[in-house]
Image (cartoon, rainbow, N blue to C red; front, side, top):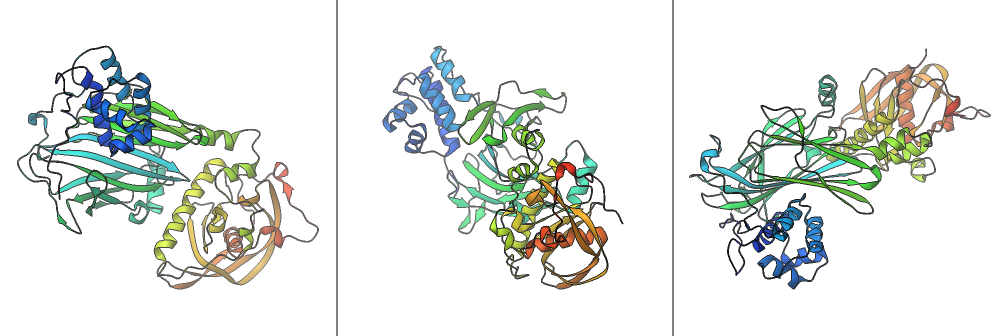
Length: 509
């Protein structure tokens, strides 16, 4: 069922004077507690404070300390809002933190009187995957019940290079399986929401979140409010280093949190644009909270204007230093990018085959992970001869590999086996991401016949020739526990990469 009462945080008062300064901080703290979905006990635990003290501050019966305000800001990731409220409270300036309610006259035509009381997003990055959690507190100021809510998922890996982005998404489109969208209604994910696709494009999805689910319908009636929440994932193959919020409905509070691994040394900045103005830096600073293994950036603003766009961008400077630093060995770079090294016994096992099409979803997930790894590696090194990655090289024991040819063609193989070779045999240098400090001369046949399985379970035989045959054979070897050094002639050893002179050049025939 829909929540029938509007949130009481905006109008929260203490037993004393209703508009007193003591309520400024308490009201803001209560609002952010509600945004975060914390009970009072859970908030006290997150702040490492006594529960009764937190309750007294929330009710206005206890004066908060500055240390308390800082701890609350950190726990709730309020982007500076709680510290600002404490300063106002501490200076004894009476008045409410929240602005006056948005009048219905400000509601755009066609929105049905819907107002977003609070829009909060958390974007977390781990191991090549971004996970976005979006929560919104909606208020229906209209005259008709609201039965669905439109959301948009739009990605752009290379925003400054549209041709490159278009090529990426035409060859490797964003899929529903990768997104893995889930949605809920209620303050604490209490009721799952169903959804239906509105637009499905290679780099763009629009979805109707329906106010209905397994247990019936729960429309948002006039005068009512509710929380909705949705979550989806996108690999960094498809997601660029930026996140943008566009204001399409009257919104009272907008907040964003970016949660990154500390070892990437992330740097974050923000730009604000509108339909009539050039991009400008955010008017307020982005907050930062560092722990031993995470860097969390938070920012918020009140009453953002309609059609404004707030864009956060970042750079993983730790990754740059690892991949470009003079002291980093190529093998260290590949390790930092998630590539399993040759000392791992997993590279000597035969990978587990897929049962297709029964395991098609698993196969797609593995390919998504491989593409994410390929993108990471391609940013660290130039591959003039093309490149490939097999699933065991990223720690996945499945028989899947991807190859990108020097011409940019993408080849995906499931359960491949070389069943026949023909033509001449030649010897050329190869490199392997799993021991990238050396290059070795490897004899390979000019032509190979590979039996493999398609995603729909069909068995095929594909013939590859020359340089492409060498690339494919290298990855098929990985799936059968073989490394290129196993093929080298007796008495011939790999050479240090410093002595190799073929980087960036294509195969020679």
